[in-house]
Length: 428
Image (cartoon, rainbow, N blue to C red; front, side, top):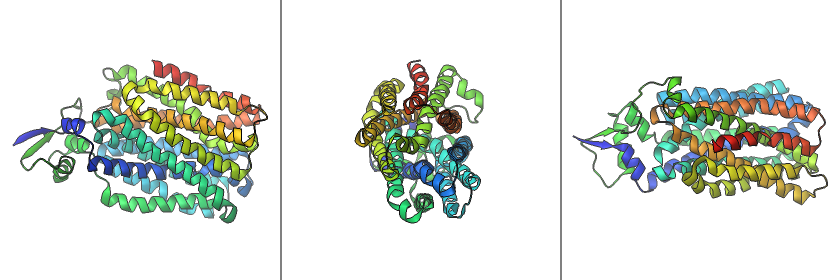
């Protein structure tokens, strides 16, 4: 029986239908994740008016969702390493799809906060599993590219839900945003049960005798016969059980703390910006429908910026994100300039969020490459979890800044400040 190193097959194989299928399905997963993520962000002004609540109470709703994302990223990272990327991703889609169906029945911000927490579990849960699956499927030279293209779907979801808010909320009320996202998610979940393949690397490490593994490898390499093959993964993945110390072994002793700092500082700006952008745009002078449409345009811009950054990230690694972070900071500071026209506000907001989103997705693109297969889900989950902690406190900080009656430009300078830490960590 001949021995086949699936690691070599995956790293050297040219792109084919198997890669396209996996990437396409991950794009869809993150598309719906984006729908759910921005539902409360783009709907915030309408929710505040509809439930007659304060901005501080809306910040609590958003922080509850981010807390759910934090818990979900750790919990589902563990589940993905234990039961498979496919299991973790599909369960995450189911988890973030169900709660939205209950939103038409909420009567208080506390009830909405509970539903956002449970939605967040699924949103956070799909991230480590999708990143791990894409890293373990892509040829070596395309790993960051695959993850960042996957996140184009996420930006598309953000853009689409903003259009839903702009055109359907005036007629049907703010709950329609959450219901649309949930229905699309449940349809996707059913489709994934039949179509989403498991990670070949994961199966090789955890269950090399599985008949499913032979079928998947044959789909990846249809021009070879693997009837009498024994599959191995000759990568630095000798550890068979996860422990936190593995995240700090060898070169990861430095890489992991820097990744955690990078995620914390980047999420503190990006997630907070995403949660308050609709409110900021209204404060800057846009009407509610104009603000929703500008939010949508910003994520269309994000798709373009992410695609532009994919190959530089593969070639230059984390340092490629420094340029996009600098552009984002400049745009955010300028957005607060008094007296801008509605067109100027829209254009600058699009640039700011687009490049902030590209920075965000670039760090998601590189994190999986720092960890071997057997701990990748947990490695991504913990790094993402550090970011989610920042996301939890971000809306609370924004609420305090709103209450301090700062000028819009002062508010945005405070919002952009963590990117200075991000740049320092990326240089390190």
